[in-house]
View 1 (cartoon, rainbow, N blue to C red):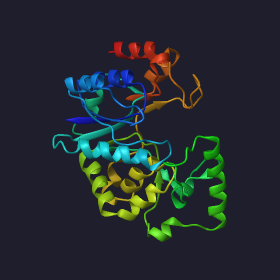
View 2: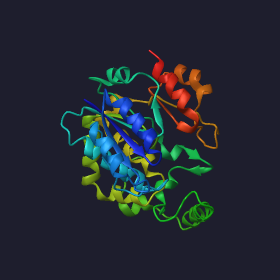
View 3: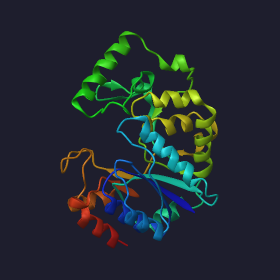
Length: 289
């Protein structure tokens, strides 16, 4: 048995459509951001078809709460001893291939499908990624995407660099820090290792709680630093994402014009989808053999 773990923050009907489509082949676990409270009729819909869900955390972009929601989903899925593999996707994803084909690829497959690179060697938006963990941030309280949040971020970086802040030294973090997409596919033993590591290393959790975009660091750092996993890591995650602006979103909200590129990508999942623009694309993908 495999489990799909879905982080959802909007559009219940689309998330439900996605969960129903995948449920024929997977156990489904969804975390609904508490900013989208579920009505009783929606809870009944989920429960009637056996879709597992929780709604515990007020999730903020770039903040610890994203990682917290991922952790809770993985914890819930592994309570089922029959779950052998977990797949992280968002509520704006859609499968590129038939759910049965996706399941078959990962069946009895102990590979780790997780993309990551050492954070010290990477930059994004002119910032060294290592700073996002080395310095202190609080984006559960401050909206990083607001004008104030953007100014705060820049000023905070400048001041902490001048003061030579080093959270790693204070917390005795000695692992190499890795960064990569949050979306990944993990065998059960790897997922359980990560849950156990978080319990056994409270300073590692403190590092993540006070960082920026911890969801892009927490799994890669634990997994890439564990030598027993090194031969099993595949530097691919089989997701199609269009890194362009489209329909007012970056990365792009996909539509029917993207069908050929998606199908030729070799991916298993793609994002972002929004039924206001993507319903015809969803229908075409579902019709494919």
